[in-house]
Structure formats: C-alpha cells, structure tokens
Image (cartoon, rainbow, N blue to C red; front, side, top):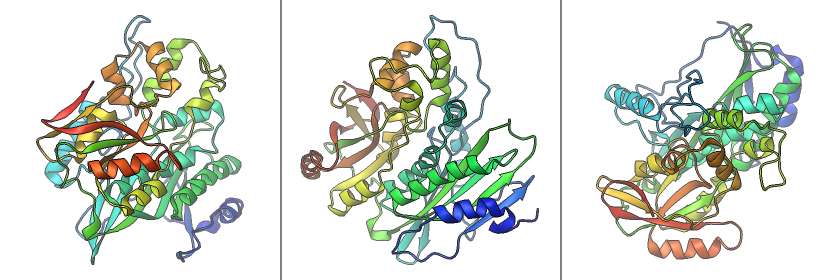
Length: 399
C-alpha cells in the first residue's frame, strides 16, 4: 500500500513535531512518521537474521483470547481463566525456536563490528482497555517505551532509538497527541531518540474511541560487555528494584478481578488515597538510567525484567542450566494494589507470582560484593532490596 510522509496529516504533524526533542548528544535523521490507510503490517529483516523478542508472557507473542465468564464468585481466579494461557505461549516459543534458533531472551542481538545491536518489541496489552475506560491516555505511551527499553537493558545495552505504531479506526488527533506525548516522555526518560512511527487509520477495525499500540527499541552494547548470565553461580545474590505497581502485565486478570469486585475505576483503592484507576494506570518504571549506572560499577552478572510470568518464569531465563533461585518473602514492600487484586480475586499465591511483578520490576543477579554496594547506595537515590539468592537446582522456590 502507498505510504505518505509525515505531512499527510498536517495537524498531527504539527502536534508531534512540537513534542519530539531527541537527546542533545544525538543527531538523528529527520523524524519520519507515516500515515497508512487500511494498511498491513511491515516486517523488518536484518540480512538473513530476523530479530525476535520474547515478550511479556515469557514468549514472543501475546495471545489475544476472548475473556470467558465461567468463574463464579467463590472460585479462585487465574490468568488462564481470564483468557491468557502462559503455557500455550511458551509452547509457541518452543516451536518457533525450531525454525529460528536463538530466540527466547529479553532482546535480540545482531552483530555490528565490535558491538551488538539489541532490539526489542512489545505493546501494553489490555491495559489499553483501562485507558479507554478511565480516560487516562497521557501515560500509556510511557508504558509502551518502558516495555521495550527495559527488555534490551537486560543485555547491558544503551537504548539508541524507538519507533512506535499507533492504529485506530478513526484518527482523533487530540487523543493521538496525548498518547504520543507519553511516548516522547518515555524516550526522554530512556535517553533515546523517538526516531519515527506509523499512524494507521483502519475504518471498522477497532471500536470507536479505541486504538492499539506497539513499539520497537534498538540499543547497542560492546561485545565484551554483554550481560548474558553465563557467569552466574550458586551463592550469587538477587537484588530487586521496586515497581510502580502492576506495570503493563496481567491486565486481563486485573479486569476480571475488577468486574468481580463490583467496584469501578473511580472507587478508592481500599486503604489508600488514590482511585483504582490511578493505581492501576500508574506508568511502568523505566529502569534504563539506574540499571546502566549500576552496570558501569561492575558485579552484575544477569538481569531479568519481571513481566508476564512473574518471578517464576522470568528469573530462570537468565540462569545457566542447573541453577535456580530462592525468593525470600517479606523482604520488600508489596504495593497494596496487589493485595487488593489477590483478595478480591481469591487468587492463589502461586498464580500471583506467575502473573504479576508483585512490587519488583527488575531483578539483578550480582556477586555478594556487588550486592553490598548496591544495597548501600540504594538507601539514597533509589530503593533496592535483597530478595533472594541463586541455588543449585532449577526453578524458583519461595520461603
């Protein structure tokens, strides 16, 4: 299909051009944003290697499954019952790996001289449904950037640039401006350039007032500085960096819990002075600057971004075979929003740990020596928690 340049929608062009401010130390080419009518999606190839990414649910793709209504009020809710089958997603990754060996990490690595380009792609899932219901559109773009840049920094890569895809049935310029403003904010927090994007207007494809988002981040890391977990050993320490709340995972289950509770997004979160809408829509923490600073000081052997799959599925992804983790409960502050979700949904502990981040959005696997330094410095500029250690044997146990 033909693609017109940024100027195809002059009002939108003015909005976005006034928002985008690439970092001062970068000089990217002029931003290109295209508007496509009834467009299909593009695939990007680098030589013969396809860059692939495992996304939120410990898999490459997020499955869109219709929500079922089979649970009664006394049953314990699960992510699968809410419409998302993590095991099915993992099986899909296993099958794709047969066709494209090497996938399964948080980011895809492509060799470039003495460095690797590290690429990641993601969306924000059904958190968008709450954005539509709450009218909070200004921060969903931060979530979009966070999900990709947080993935690529697990390899030690510094994000270079970000691309976005915004699709809707009818373009509401004011609404799109709010969303893109959030994307710009996320790029500024990540110290990367918003290099371009696609605005797809597809009549009859989405419900009125709704849209979909996806994003793509590319970073770079020296080959001799890649963090790949190969040096992780039993006795290493797990350091947790706190989340802002639910981030951008598990919202199919969150929405089911909200329905069961009988509360609306305007109701107060029990025990807190914020509404449920505000608590659930809190933007995902962007860990780029904090994590890259910690990496520069040495001692970090592996990094896990805690997304769909929680601790249970994400932490083992960075371990060599034969190693597992022990997580010590009550060593960090679990945000009250998770306590409400668990109580209102009667959700089992194991299901919570495999669906949500439970208050820890990033886990660093570090030497004991490095752990002392990180925890001491965490008392100042940021918080960090000692949450467990690496042990012999596979899987994650909780004590």
